[in-house]
Length: 410
Image (tube, rainbow, N blue to C red):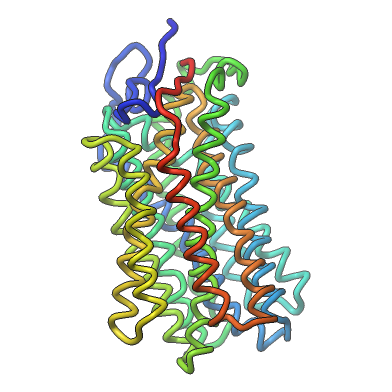
């Protein structure tokens, strides 16, 4: 059967997303989507604490802000570029619980960072843990919308919220452990990730068995027919959003330190930034289910500008309020971005998810190295505000100019 999946015209969810082939509703329960969100939180928890422990690793190993920014970008770029590949494996190959295995890898390798004797070994551990993260994201995201009973925006919001909460808790818990016991004691955070991997393997059994029964060879040419330009535009928007969130989150400890505050305060700011982002993604998907994808996408960038201005030009609680509100509004359209890509290519939902959540994040994370480079020369207080605001403005322009009416063959 040949059908068309609307991407950008009215913004409503396309039938193939969240509905089994032939129109039957997905049989998996809401509990399974929540569990996938928990797995997403676990997957993002471990790379999430990297930014907050980098200052301690700098003191131990003696590297510069440029190296710190490059390590963060290295982690994000390599990890994220692997996601479309793993999405292809999930879409085109016989189904396996790749995501569950990835959670175990992430838990083990990221929790060994405190044992790294030098920068090369540190980079290897980050890469190995990041590979585990890459195993989880595309399969988990595609499965969440596939079993969503036609509420793809809501399902992706639940999935994304789990990731945002885990990403927010990572730096706070890691700093508490490092401050109290030292870098090597990060290893105590590994067992929860291993247990989460076992849970996700159990949750995935039934959906993967159903996917295996209807599995057919995937033609990428047919799956992406007519969707190339739309995916490129959506990828550019996701990249700009990721550049802002990665750049600010990674540099907040150094930004607050430059303002005379403690590293613990910087970790707290990261927690607020990421937790507020989690609240934003929770609401963004359901709102887009009702009012359309594009309005939510464009409004998220436009409304972020005044809140970031408040953060950069105020102090104390008012600054933290601006930081939190800016994060919530900006990230509210993250699940919307991914669902739009899935609706463009319903037969390659995992690959589309990997492109948005992986490649988009990877390209955006290059901003961290750029900000670190500029900050080494001009100071973080001078560099972070204008770079962040400029990227948000560019995202607002691209979202407003997003083409209408593009369709992809299903």
